[in-house]
Length: 113
Image (cartoon, rainbow, N blue to C red; front, top):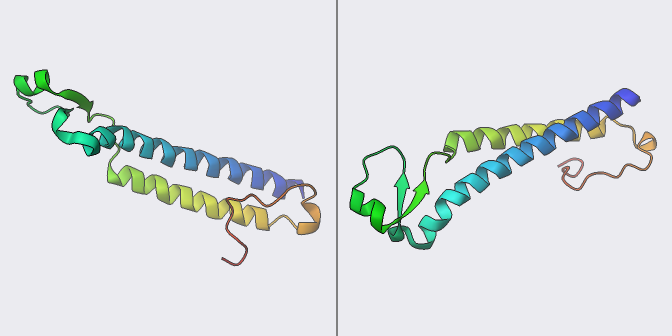
Protein backbone atom coordinates (compact mmCIF):
# COMPACT_ATOMS: atom_id res chain seq x y z
CA UNK A 1 0.00 0.00 0.00
CA UNK A 2 3.00 2.40 -0.03
CA UNK A 3 1.98 3.42 -3.55
CA UNK A 4 -1.43 4.63 -2.30
CA UNK A 5 0.26 6.60 0.48
CA UNK A 6 2.70 8.17 -1.97
CA UNK A 7 -0.10 9.09 -4.35
CA UNK A 8 -2.11 10.64 -1.52
CA UNK A 9 0.79 12.77 -0.30
CA UNK A 10 1.55 13.84 -3.88
CA UNK A 11 -2.09 14.88 -4.45
CA UNK A 12 -2.25 16.56 -1.03
CA UNK A 13 0.81 18.66 -1.93
CA UNK A 14 -0.72 19.55 -5.32
CA UNK A 15 -3.94 20.62 -3.59
CA UNK A 16 -2.02 22.79 -1.10
CA UNK A 17 -0.06 24.43 -3.94
CA UNK A 18 -3.24 25.09 -5.93
CA UNK A 19 -4.93 26.56 -2.86
CA UNK A 20 -1.93 28.81 -2.21
CA UNK A 21 -2.07 30.03 -5.83
CA UNK A 22 -5.74 31.02 -5.53
CA UNK A 23 -4.99 32.79 -2.25
CA UNK A 24 -2.06 34.67 -3.87
CA UNK A 25 -4.24 35.85 -6.75
CA UNK A 26 -7.05 36.93 -4.42
CA UNK A 27 -4.52 38.80 -2.25
CA UNK A 28 -3.18 40.59 -5.36
CA UNK A 29 -6.70 41.54 -6.33
CA UNK A 30 -7.40 42.75 -2.80
CA UNK A 31 -4.22 44.85 -2.75
CA UNK A 32 -5.51 46.58 -5.88
CA UNK A 33 -9.18 46.95 -4.96
CA UNK A 34 -9.03 47.76 -1.23
CA UNK A 35 -7.87 51.37 -1.55
CA UNK A 36 -10.33 51.95 -4.39
CA UNK A 37 -13.21 50.54 -2.39
CA UNK A 38 -12.21 52.63 0.61
CA UNK A 39 -12.09 55.95 -1.24
CA UNK A 40 -11.50 55.67 -4.96
CA UNK A 41 -11.39 59.44 -5.51
CA UNK A 42 -8.06 59.70 -3.64
CA UNK A 43 -6.27 57.36 -6.07
CA UNK A 44 -5.25 56.97 -9.66
CA UNK A 45 -4.46 53.70 -11.41
CA UNK A 46 -1.08 53.28 -13.04
CA UNK A 47 -2.00 51.06 -15.98
CA UNK A 48 0.02 52.25 -18.97
CA UNK A 49 -2.55 54.78 -20.09
CA UNK A 50 -2.24 58.55 -20.29
CA UNK A 51 -2.83 60.02 -16.85
CA UNK A 52 -3.06 63.80 -16.50
CA UNK A 53 -0.04 65.16 -14.60
CA UNK A 54 -2.30 66.97 -12.12
CA UNK A 55 -4.02 63.72 -11.26
CA UNK A 56 -0.66 62.07 -10.56
CA UNK A 57 0.36 64.96 -8.28
CA UNK A 58 -2.89 65.10 -6.33
CA UNK A 59 -3.68 61.43 -5.95
CA UNK A 60 -2.07 58.26 -4.63
CA UNK A 61 -0.83 55.70 -7.15
CA UNK A 62 -2.34 52.21 -7.26
CA UNK A 63 -0.53 49.84 -9.59
CA UNK A 64 -2.71 48.10 -12.10
CA UNK A 65 0.16 46.03 -13.48
CA UNK A 66 -0.09 43.00 -11.20
CA UNK A 67 -3.87 42.65 -11.10
CA UNK A 68 -4.93 39.13 -12.03
CA UNK A 69 -7.59 38.82 -14.68
CA UNK A 70 -10.89 37.12 -14.00
CA UNK A 71 -9.69 34.36 -16.31
CA UNK A 72 -6.53 33.82 -14.26
CA UNK A 73 -8.54 33.65 -11.05
CA UNK A 74 -11.14 31.33 -12.58
CA UNK A 75 -8.44 28.99 -13.95
CA UNK A 76 -6.73 28.87 -10.56
CA UNK A 77 -10.03 28.10 -8.84
CA UNK A 78 -10.76 25.28 -11.30
CA UNK A 79 -7.26 23.85 -10.77
CA UNK A 80 -7.76 24.02 -6.99
CA UNK A 81 -11.12 22.25 -7.23
CA UNK A 82 -9.66 19.52 -9.45
CA UNK A 83 -6.70 19.11 -7.09
CA UNK A 84 -9.12 18.75 -4.18
CA UNK A 85 -10.99 16.02 -6.06
CA UNK A 86 -7.75 14.19 -6.85
CA UNK A 87 -6.57 14.41 -3.23
CA UNK A 88 -9.93 13.12 -2.02
CA UNK A 89 -9.83 10.20 -4.45
CA UNK A 90 -6.26 9.39 -3.42
CA UNK A 91 -7.31 9.42 0.25
CA UNK A 92 -10.26 7.14 -0.50
CA UNK A 93 -7.90 4.64 -2.18
CA UNK A 94 -6.08 4.06 1.11
CA UNK A 95 -8.01 1.32 2.91
CA UNK A 96 -9.27 2.50 6.30
CA UNK A 97 -7.51 -0.32 8.12
CA UNK A 98 -4.19 0.80 6.57
CA UNK A 99 -4.46 4.50 7.38
CA UNK A 100 -2.83 3.98 10.76
CA UNK A 101 -2.49 7.30 12.57
CA UNK A 102 -3.52 9.34 9.54
CA UNK A 103 -6.68 11.33 10.13
CA UNK A 104 -8.95 12.47 7.34
CA UNK A 105 -7.87 16.03 6.53
CA UNK A 106 -10.52 18.61 7.34
CA UNK A 107 -10.28 20.11 3.85
CA UNK A 108 -11.38 16.89 2.17
CA UNK A 109 -15.09 16.69 1.33
CA UNK A 110 -17.18 14.33 3.39
CA UNK A 111 -17.49 10.83 1.92
CA UNK A 112 -20.39 10.61 -0.45
CA UNK A 113 -20.62 14.40 -0.84
